[in-house]
Image (tube, rainbow, N blue to C red):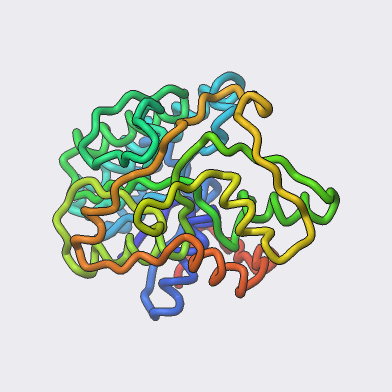
Length: 299
């Protein structure tokens, strides 16, 4: 049995659609079906259902709220919840695929360099700290695991930067976007395909980085991403530095992660431009997002 936690989230929904297309049966849960912060509930669920594979997509991702009013919930979901899921998965002999983030690193890497998979962790935000602790909980549990770090996630099934830019473009003729934060966008479809690929190909367990690719030497900023999103509109996109958009949580100035280990598995990673074009061809599918039915949704 395959279990997807966070089945109604942006990535969980993408993963459900991918498995549906491939005719793969799974059980998807969200907070209403399985509260991962409740250890008793998690243990009971795992003991009853005994999943063989767990895609752990459930996470607290409100980065700025995690700095204050959301701090407690951030800790419960990203640390305690992940620990509960990892330990239960280890107990029943399941394989766990856990999604982490570039925020576990600091922002000190010089622009033009990439974070290797084994780079030292130095999170500078509460969100980054709890995701790092989640990684440690997975490793400490002894579960067979893949930990996949990603960044700048966009897709068809939830609010994200692409939809934000498109919506703003309908209201304003000119937009300003930061050009001093560097990284690579990640299409949820590419990420979901990689998660499934790791398991199907029996890749070595451990840590991986997965974003969409970029041309050799290409430096990508949020400004570049916005320009590509709106390239077929008349909206003028202007660059500004991050000081124009103060935020509670500190953002990494360089979140570009090395894709060498992911590529070494044989997985072909589309460029972020090609991924964006493919996503836009599908259109805004949020209204088609399937809600989970009943206590447990099985497909």
